[in-house]
Structure formats: structure tokens, C-alpha cells
Length: 207
Image (tube, rainbow, N blue to C red; front, top):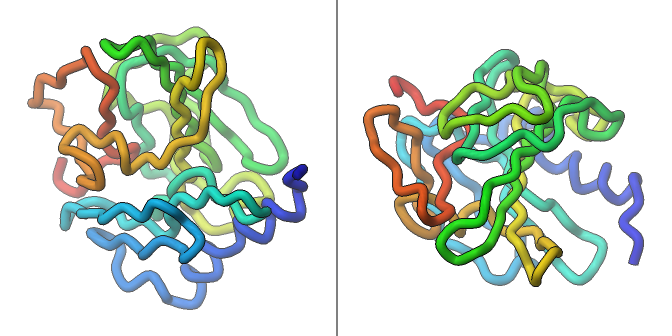
């Protein structure tokens, strides 16, 4: 079934409505429950200093989809690469505003990954750039009609499926510290790059 712009808009309004109504209880260390339709549901552990998540991943066989997580923040907050890779997209478009796409080379499993960062106020990298984990690639914003005018980062992750295809994946499956264990980037840590594991796409407080 074709997923229209109107359908996207309905899903995208969920997080802004929660933010505007004060349903996000705190700016740091909070993560909402999954929607009932999402299977499987992952138990998420948030560091107390990590900017809160306002909406979880949702992929169903019906029309309802939210193919990423929404991280709240202030306009101008740095957005950072979750792993080393190459920028394969850096552009602006009406629905999601400024966006950056990073392709991550095949890891020990032989699979590639792509991460996508949307609603940016500003893009700090261009197509073809090589980026390190933790490198600033943009500034958090509210660009694109589907942002609802609420500052947040919409972060998506795609994993290779078959020889050339890719499938949307819940970002909570790939944190460095384990499934559901949101991992703040630490410049003092020597990360194992032989397998694809991610750190949080924004800086945690005091990091």
C-alpha cells in the first residue's frame, strides 16, 4: 500500500502534539513506551544525561509507520554521526527539511548500514565527506513540514537486506552497550568498528 504524504503527516504530528501539551515529562533521561502495534517492543534504558526520546520506532503492515526515533532538543544543538562512514546524501526537501544520510561500510557480518538525520536547522557536511563517530554533521532544527514546527531530530537506521536491498530497523537494536541500551558518545572510548554498533546521534549532557 502506498504511504502518502498525508499519512506521513498524521504520524509525524504525534511527537509535536506530545511536546506541545507537556506530555514529555523531562528533557533528559526519558523514553516513551512503544505503540501497541509495534512488535517486538524493546526495553529501553536511557542514561540520565541523554536528551529524551519523544517517539519510538513504529513499523506495521498497515498505514501507521514512524521509521525512526525522535530526539528532543533545542534549535542549534549539535547532531553527530553515530558511527564512521561516508556522507551519501546532504540536501533539503519539503517534507523532512534539511537531511543528512551516511552510509556505513560492511562490517564483519558483511552488511552495510545507512543512517539518516532529518529536520536539521543546518547541514555541516556535504556528499562525499568521510565522517568519524561523534563528528558534528548538522544542527538540530525544525525544518520540513513534517517537523510540526517542533525542534527535534528524527533519526532513522537502515540495515542491508539481501545482496543490494536494505530494510528499516529499530535504532534500539544497535547501540554499542547492547540492545535497548542507549549509549552516549564518549571521545575517550576506543570503539570497536569491526561490527556496526551506534552511539547516540546527539551529545549527552556533560559529554
